[in-house]
Length: 112
Image (cartoon, rainbow, N blue to C red; front, side, top):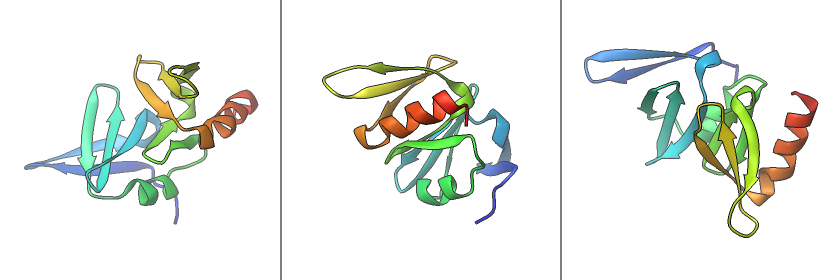
């Protein structure tokens, strides 16, 4: 699947345009996805797996239910036990699974 430059999402009678470079993260939501870009949150019918496949380099799956824009990650914190959370530049918190934690750290160090 090829990468996209923007998402166009129907919101009632309106259409919301989210350019890829403004996307902070995407999360699985009720069989589809929820996108967050700045203060905007929109739901779309596309699954997170399909959405992740269309994102360019610079986005990384950090949990089975989350993909983040690596440019937005400010730090990764240990919370309860072995659980980690990515803190984004706007203060948003996104869970990081043990399975994806090491790859996230490597990607941040390499500046992927």
